[in-house]
Figure (tube, rainbow, N blue to C red):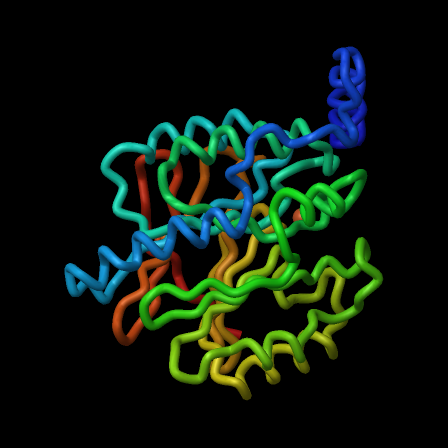
Length: 272
Ligand SMILES: [Fe+2]
């Protein structure tokens, strides 16, 4: 109920302005995947020049309705960060409207590193789908950095009338010469998916050599592994406060830290 009231207030506030809040242009252009990939290529060149083979990725998630928490976190991390890039794991917006994308984009610009957004269920309501395709890019895409390939995929089943993530796309786009990490808003757990779909999808990911998955949506940190298989990580939400995670990709291992403001800790790996 509180969320519905908050959505209604957002819409009422925006409709009181002299513009159409639902499908006007996103003024901030920096959410574009193409633009972010160009920036990342320049950063990768520097890593190669300096023979750096380890890198850190900032993980952000679910700023919907709390752009202020995102902005404070960004300001905290703007100086002296050593992240190669960031992943924003979905639900940038609550209602999929242009102004919400603008708020998030305007904050992210201050980070001065490429940020790659993953589509969330809330981003696909209202005019979110059209805005995403016009100003951000594909729902499914890959990023390469050094010896790692990131694969971002859309698994928002209810908003897209898909029932399972597009495994064929993932299988076609893994790079067998690299470490492959997959990213989606909704984790491979029973939520919009059935237990059977989850088991099948995880088994498919294992069969193509995926070792790590990263997600948002549940608004709580979680790090788990099923029978010594893939390690899954969920980043907490800005909806809950100034939370974020750090993923460190080393030669032989991927490590996670969870953070609140300036304090970070290593998560316990839960076994199922
Ligand atoms: Fe969500």
